[in-house]
Length: 506
Ligand SMILES: [Zn+2]
Image (cartoon, rainbow, N blue to C red):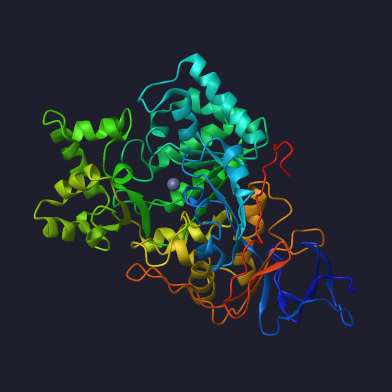
């Protein structure tokens, strides 16, 4: 009998706090880190030699949309292969519902990595009052707040707001404050896809003020999701946005943010270019309006403005369009040519055929770097689960974490490696209340990575997205090797993670 299950020797240990690496052996027992230091003479099965490698905590992605596919793709391979050991689904206002049913199902499946959820405000709203563009009645608002508290008790880590998307965009301050307060009362965090990252309505700065006001009025921790300066009217405003967040923090408001390391966002026609009023009542109501010669011209005119706001039809690339996969990978200018119509009319036709997901090139590298230099930021993918070869997904689905660490940290030198690791481990884990993950320390869950830092590279590109990364050597989840040094996956090391108010799920 050996005292430990696994020992990792000889690696440079980066513990996730941001402190400089040091040599230390790490021992694991029953899925938990139990001892750190010189463990000479100790034996275990396996003993992993980390010579020449860095040992870090597993990456934690608190902003994904993996909830959509996780029940059919529980291996979550595109996350595991970038070193992500825990993620949260249910962002941008949309989640599975009810939470207990979703997590109950996942408890019966072999999860590749650890999985937790946020409950989406838009999803709660849809349950409580449908998809209409109006304020809730008192009764509906009470129902929504009750459902929010219940979702927390069922295991959610908090709630996501999608104030940019219908139906979240129909919500005004009294509603958002009331529902957020119900989440705060259970110790949850609020993540916000803010109302405007560009100049659609209140503008980036106005939308940040709204997010900060939610933190203040609901007395809740607010995470601003995927902070960016989208579209030409907003380019150059990164410093102003960060100053606003800094001043909120100085006033004692718990506001932080995250970011994905790419110059393009991922969206759909309904999010990117179709006005929200046209989505009052849901997608069927939208289709009826798009087919109504009285209403369609007004929608079309606003769509033209929105295409221009984002940088033009050539900056919108079709990622996935089931009804006509030959359009995938083409930008809307090219789609227009292929279909023999104006790009805006092609967009309307594609929406009526079932919609599409898009990659939208709308950011400037200077803003990305300015935001990244701020120590309050965290790294997220904003991606979801993909099958190799399917569609033309945003490369963030495959390469977010290796890209941040290799391109921005190592090659551009924006921060130390240890600080880069902190932004992907302890900072996000503790932000959402995963207190037993994100650090290498005795008592923490044994979610660990061995990285070949010199070879680390994201290989997924906008042109050829379906590619895994280089330099992710070994991934250990809950003490089990989930990806070994030969690239072999071992299923089922992950588990469902429960938020702070969960009853009986742990
Ligand atoms: Zn979002």
